[in-house]
Length: 194
Image 1 (cartoon, rainbow, N blue to C red):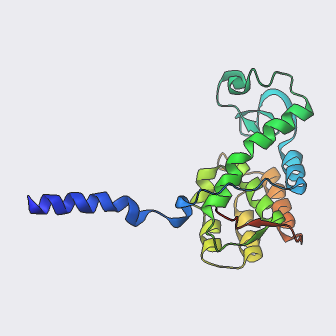
Image 2: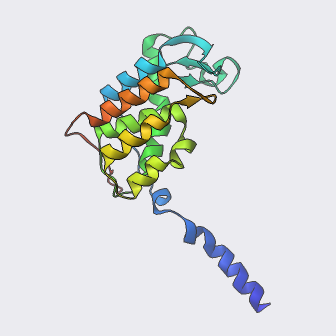
Image 3: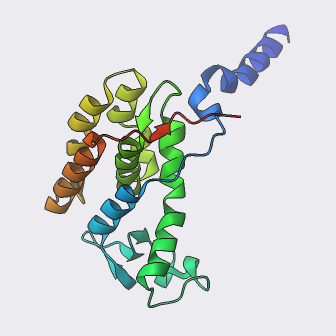
C-alpha cells in the first residue's frame, strides 16, 4: 500500500519534472515584418482558388494548406476567387501559429532580431510547427550557439518535399538565410512575459 502511494505520487510529479520552461511560457509571438511577408508571398505564390502545390497538397491564397475539401474551413469568411488583399489577410492569420511556435520553441535566452525571427517563421510556415520543434536548428539556438551560424548551416538542410530535393525550396532557404543575415535594429525575441 505504501509503495503504491509513493508510486502514485511519483507519477503525479512526472509532468512537472519533465515540463520544459519553454512550454510554460504564455507569451504571444510578435508579428513578422514586411520583409518576411514579402518573402513568403514570393515563394508561396498567389492562388485564387484551391489548387495542388508542387507535392500535390491543396493550397489557396499564399500557401494556406486546405484542411477540408475545397478549403471549406475558410468559408464563408473568405470566398473564391480570393483577391490578393483577402489572401494577405488569410496569410496573416495563418502566420500566427508559426510565430507562436518559434516564440515558444526558442529558449528565453535566444535573442533574435526581426529579420532572423522572420526567416525562422517563414521556415516554420513552410515546414510545419512539429518539424521545427524537434529540429537541430532550434536545439542549437537553445544551446546558445551563434544565431547566424546556426541559421546559415541548418536552414539549407530543409530542401526536401515528398522525399525529393526541390529547387524552389533550395531558393527559399537561401532567401531565408539572406533575410536572417540582413542587419536590423528591430528586436523580435525574446518577448517580455507579463
